[in-house]
Figure (cartoon, rainbow, N blue to C red):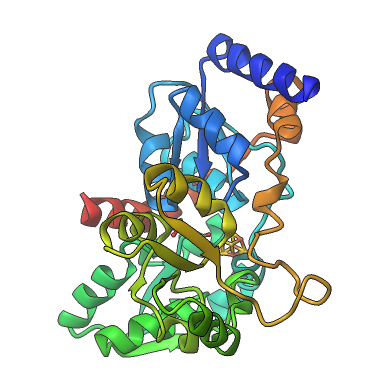
Length: 321
Ligand code: 13P
Ligand code: SF4
């Protein structure tokens, strides 16, 4: 506890002294989200993190999240220093979509508009026509479909299938998945719903279709938090990373939030509703980013890639504006 208090106090001082701001995702641990709040930083979904980083006056961004979030921040603000608590925090969607294979896939279908999820490397974004996050993916694909465009979608197959079903768009799907959301089980969820018939079910669309079908609300992390406030229910079963409970509970202290069940159990599931890469963003790692060797923490994006990746990212931000 002493060490934790020391780290928090030091980080607060260092952020000020270094003209730096903390940009955190809802899946980081509660103490990191609290620190972002206490230091006027940002806690949000990946779309808002991108906007916040771009618009921040501070010259250094400490991105507490996963690598693609740091890269997005750097692409949008090349003049800023972007540091991450650890450069090892990646994402299974990013890992499962290597740029060379993805380029081959796109080259084989030159008549398709390429739409990639934000959870990808800068090199994959550079090959895309559009970048989307889960909060805006549906609207953008609807828009492209209304123009009669055929779409290549990558990398999350569950999110892609959900959007395809909602919009009826012509979509060629890359077969990637998020190791956290892929583990939610509709069978176990049905059993849980029997025990809590009064609970509403909130689902992030990276979950399997059979889980999404049971949802009272489907959406990005921000959209799920909004639903937890607006729905009349007093109890919720939540199929996304448990980091989100910090904000849900804070905004609706009288409501009850339960973790949706995964197919495995503590011994067999890989992630058990908490992203192992998001979990790397601890206080020690943030302290190290502010005090240690910057080269171990700093995000760099190759200039040529950056210019190409900025176009589809700005297309999304302009669309969202
Ligand atoms: P959001 O954009 O909904 O925050 O999702 C990011 C993410 O990594 C979900 O797993
Ligand atoms: Fe990637 Fe899933 Fe972790 Fe989000 S929760 S960063 S999609 S592995």
